[in-house]
Length: 114
Image (cartoon, rainbow, N blue to C red; front, side, top):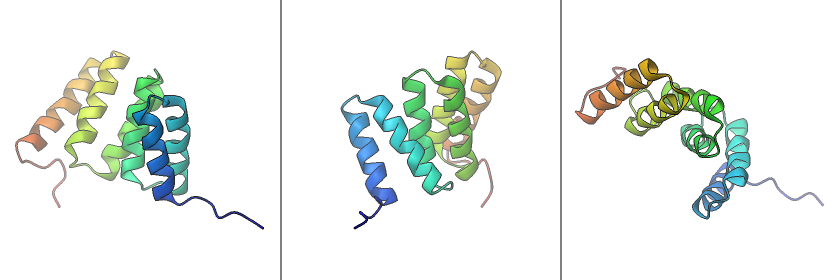
C-alpha cells in the first residue's frame, strides 16, 4: 500500500519546524521539495533563500531570492531578503538596488503596478 505524498503545506510546515529548532540543512531540503512541487510557491522560494543564506550558500540563496521577487515584485520582505543576500555576496550595487526597492515598498509605493 502506498503512503500518500505529503502536501505542500505539510512539507512547508515541517521545513519551518526544522528551521525553528536550528536544523537548517533539513529545512533547506524540505524547502527545495516545496518549490519543486510548486515552482510558483512564493513562500517556499523566500524561505529557501533565507535558509540557504544561513547555511552559507549565498549564490543559490540569491537565485531563490530572485525567484521570490519575480513571483511577488511588490513584497517588502522579498526585496529586504534579496538585499541581505547581495550584501553577503559582496554585490553592493545590487544590494543597494534591492534595498531601494524595499524602501519604495515600505513607503507605500509599488515596484510593479497592479
